[in-house]
Length: 140
Image 1 (cartoon, one colour):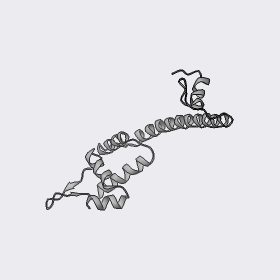
Image 2: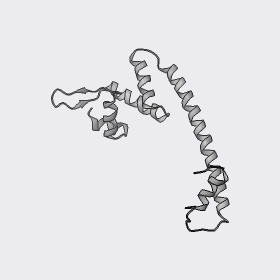
Image 3: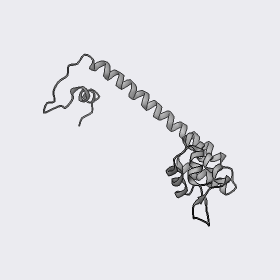
Image 4: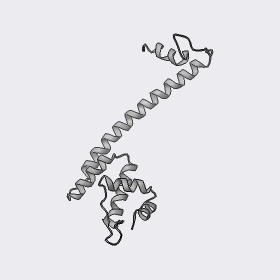
């Protein structure tokens, strides 16, 4: 199977597939006839694994580590468990941060609904935005 065939089969771009080859996630053979990359069943399995891991939020470095474990004949599962725990903690923190930002945005929108539009001055560009910073005690 060549680049275009595998990329189409996996519903990814050819550039993505070539990138994964370039960084060593898969290592296709070269055709002796034309020098084209030839992907076999193992390459397909590895690419499906890579795409599944990426869909779960694993970084490319994580994926490399998991594949390295597997290539050594070691179970990558303990690392996968540790990595998913870290990713979950990061995602939960990001979600909490986003929820806090959402609340701040809603409060700003409500506060701004009664304030007039004003032109910029020598002291302020947009009093709505800079007023939020001033109320929070931030200074430029």
